Length: 435
Image (cartoon, rainbow, N blue to C red; front, top):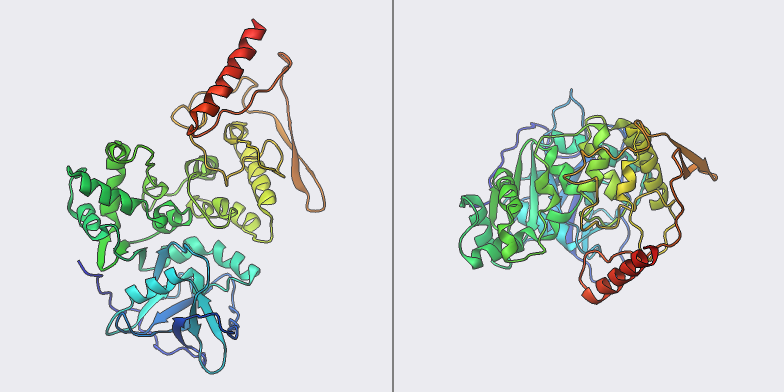
C-alpha cells in the first residue's frame, strides 16, 4: 500500500509573507555554513511554524517554506505532524534558506522522512519539531514543548516515520496490516520483531504524539499502515508469543497506551514507572514528555517544563510534586541506586535508569496497601540552596530496630550469574550470622 494522498483543506495562500521563506535541503560536507537566524514567534503561547514541503521525486533536492501560524480554536489551520526518531543527532543535512539568510542544519533521519513523505505533485504541510522549533532558543523550546499536546491534537493526522525498508520490514508491515494473531512462521515472527525494535517504538515522546492524535498512519519505506493495526498487536505481544524468538523482548511503551486516552494528575507516578524503560536523548524528557498525557497537566507544565533546570533539579521537583499530590510514599518503590555518582537526594528516583525487573508495589501488586505508617502518609519536603530545591524528606515513623549492615545490590537484570551468586552467598551469610 502506498503512502495515502491527503488533499489540501486550509484554503490559505500557499506563499508565506516572509520574503525569505524558500529553503532547500542538501548534504553538509563539513564546510563553513552561515547559521540561519529564526524569525521570532510573535505569540509564544499560540504561534507555531509549519513546514511546507515542495513536491518532488525521491532523488530531487528537497525544498520547503516555513510559515508562522496560530494554533487556537477560532483559527482553522491544516497541517500534519511528523513523529520520528532523531537517532544520530549529528547535523549532517543543510537547509538552504536562500537570499543570503543562512542555512539550517538537520539530521539524516529528518531529511529522510521529508524526502519520503513529500508528494510528487503538490505541497505537503507538516509540523516537524527539529525545524519548527528553534532548538537553540531555550525559552522558545520551553513554550513550544508546553504546547506539544495541543500541536499533535490539532493536527489533521500524525504521520509516523519508521525509516526505510530494511530487515524484511516490507513483509513485516504487511503482516501487521493483515495478520490475525501471531504469524506461524519463525521468519515472519523475526521480521515483525525487528520492526518493533526500531528506535521509534522505544522513544518516550512518541507516546504523547500517538495518544493525543486524531488519526495516525505508520510509514516504513513505501508502505503505510493505520495505527489501529499496530495497536492490535499490543494484545499479541503481551501474550509473550514473540519471546520464543527473543526472550528479552519487552512490549514497547507506546503500545501500552490507548490512542485518545489521558490519565489524571494522580497517575503521574504510574506513568513515570510504566515508561521507565523508554528512551530519550535528553534525560529531562523522561518527565517532561509525560505531562501531555495528564488530564490536567498545567500545574506541572508551567513550572517544570524548563530546560534551564538541571536533571537533578527536575527529578527532585517532580518527586516533591508526586508526594504532595498522592499523600503516600509509593514513590520510594521506584528508587534505584547504583554505583555511579548521583547528586540527587536518596529519596528521589533517577528516571533515566531503566527498571528491570519490576519493583514491589508498582506493578500488578500496586493495590497492596503498604501503609504501615498510616494513611495518608506524613511527609514534609525540606528545601535549600539558591534555587530552593528539594533536599530532604521528613517523615514520621516508629523505631522498630537498627540497621547493622547493608549488603550489595542484586544485579538487575541478571546477566552475570557469577556476580549474582556472590551477592546471594553474602546475603545467606548475613542471615546465618543473625541466627
